[in-house]
Length: 495
Image (cartoon, rainbow, N blue to C red; front, side):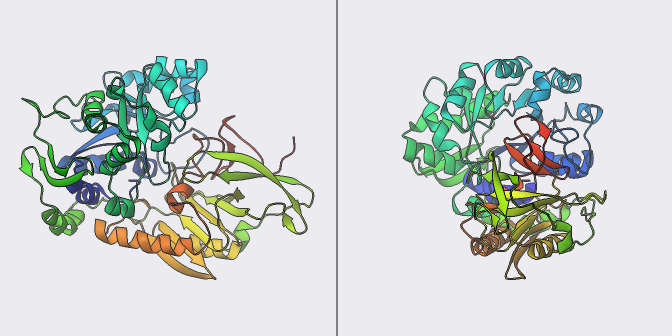
């Protein structure tokens, strides 16, 4: 879902590039629609030519009591999907403090899926805490962002998913860990990659290319971590090898070093990219989800974002690190002339599930927004409306546009909507074709670049500013959250 594509569209965009198998966690749509969202995703996966497998979402919401989301996903509901043919395990257990402290509700989920693969999520974790998390049964992690962190997890027996997405770019830091001996423990993943980048650079094929060209990883090792290692880890023993008795998913290359795909076969049948594109619109219509607008929020005004600051007081600032999901927690002193740093903009999160809560407001630094406003309903993991801006008036304009669109992304500058992308499927996914979506993303990014030196993928980076399970400081619909202490905090620094 983080590609903003449906399973049909994603298949059209990635299968001709050699991505014959996908293992995903649809917890975005489950946070909005609950089990109905998971069921729709599973139906789409069953009908795909691509092998599309699901991990059952484990943390809906990501962290209890920290945000408002659209639905829950109970253990009883999760149980019903354990033996589904498309299910390979339990998706990332994001509440790692809860697992470490032995919360029974979380341990019960792990026990229920212990015969399958148990996915992890533990950025920066180490010491006895990491030992405890692994002891609970967690088998892998895709959140490592430093070399020694990745090495530590490998040494303790975890499998390492090396992530290179559109916002979180960890391949350069972690690629030196890959060698002949530990490659069965290493895998490649994208986590979040947008349609424009898939169309112009690729998906897993782009990561293989980077390993070979930039990190001198031997060809057989680079292809191993992109195929057999992953299939083996998730128990897909019929995949990942060209061998007797295995499923004939084959990618023929004209240049193995450049990963130039010449032909793709799934179950021995050739895949024709033009046929996929020709059938895409009809398949999109046939697979449309059975629900409508999920945005239950009334239009807002500039006064909804009004904040009062006292000269001489210090206020917390969410400091963005470009191309990373983690943030820093810094502060800034306010005076009659404004804040003591000129890169501070405003951020707000508005719940969109009909509870009529006032916007939660905060301060954002380092994002590079010099003017205008950006708003989105893709806002991990509860997918409330997140907006950043330099003025309350433009923030309100951007929010009202995504409400009108039934969900989506929007750029406002000079008091006008410059570009917007409707995402009518749960406020997360588009009903357009892969090619059309890539073109719209291109226009949206061009409009966003006019607002300042933003991150490479501003909307994906912005989407993680409200995810409390990744440190250090985030903003949810409930307020400012300290992702290291796992507790809410205040905008004004009082200690």
